[in-house]
Length: 206
Image (cartoon, rainbow, N blue to C red):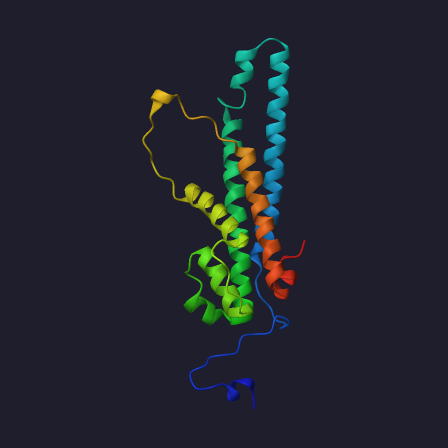
């Protein structure tokens, strides 16, 4: 006799215990490390630019200082690094949530019913199904996830917009601040997942 022999008609499997052992791929581990490594690279590049700008300012070259990092490839590299950090942070969260669902619900069930949901709904439905907890719409984990993925979607689904230059040209975005916040959001989401599931402590521990 196996566990399947005791299942009611039409039931594929029981939800696994959070202490169930098994083998699963863990892409979130590499994505998480990569996001942090690239954020470090971005900060180093920006610090170097600031140092060079201060040197030019001390020499009285204000115009040259203002152009440093904006008219050469270094600015493009910083922007690309910042975008990569945001995307990797979002990838980390989605991969961790998918692992959470697959490890406890099984890959086939997860693929049929949860895989194609939006990330906020996927988190809410996975926690409801596995932990029997119904999250409030304003739960912190859902709000932070929504913020991170809104930013990610702006980057991977770029839209052209009309500009009203009568109010001046758009200001340069804070690439370092944006990337730093993305990593903070990623880490906070993983921390909150660990409060809901022992399995997530194992998979996403510090």
